[in-house]
Length: 174
Image 1: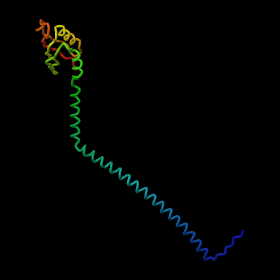
Image 2: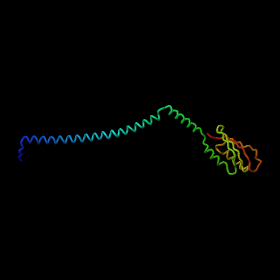
Image 3: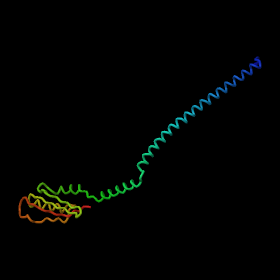
Image 4: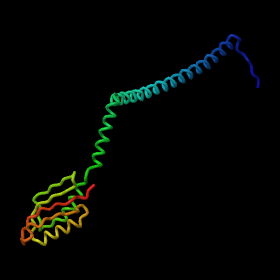
């Protein structure tokens, strides 16, 4: 095949310039689109980082307000430690009373109960239905793990029914 160049030089030059301008236009358009895309990425990342910065800044402000005076924090920690020491020294009265309530049957009634935590003593005043119920009460208290050295004066042991008693015992509690 034969290629004939029938265009004059002036038109050839104009054709080459158009072709060059088209290529340059496409390159510029792709550069502009790339720059717009990159600037969009930078804008969105700046918004995300700004949001994170605001969250961290507000958190630091709140924490800074709470720990503004470390002396107060150490005072609070000291008070909490003292309270925990008090709680360790406390007596578990629920278990003592629960096990003691099983000892007192229907045939004995307690009118007065005094507990001295410092001396670890208990004083009971009450009425027993009979002599046997009073003796059974004393034996049950002897068997209990919370009471020892039970002192039951025999003042009204000669009565057969409704015997008033004053009982003292030492407590075996921690």
